[in-house]
Image 1 (spheres, rainbow, N blue to C red):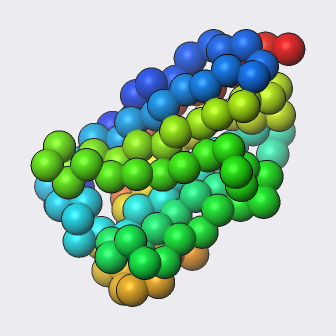
Image 2: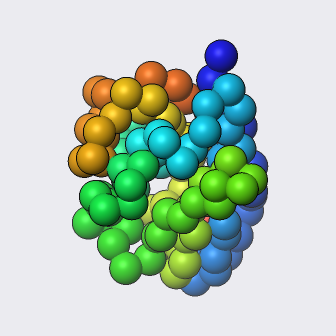
Length: 125
């Protein structure tokens, strides 16, 4: 069974940075398409960053482009989301997701099989 556990959220001032972690078990991230989603209060969940297991296909939403970067540590079976230049608009519940059947292209929102419980990020002005 695949389990994903996020950590690293918290309260940060505008302009600050956070790094979120997503530790996986039951499947190796090196062969899995992974993505980070977020859901702001009163809004739908959206995909913000995703990459294919090969690392050759990457998606970054316009709202976070140039500020958020996804990375992997295959030895730790963990993916990360580095978030810089945070603004209050980045306040949301952040969740990682895995598409264990994914191919060479990053996975779209509807393709993910497994989800973590999420970690809250709050950015104060």
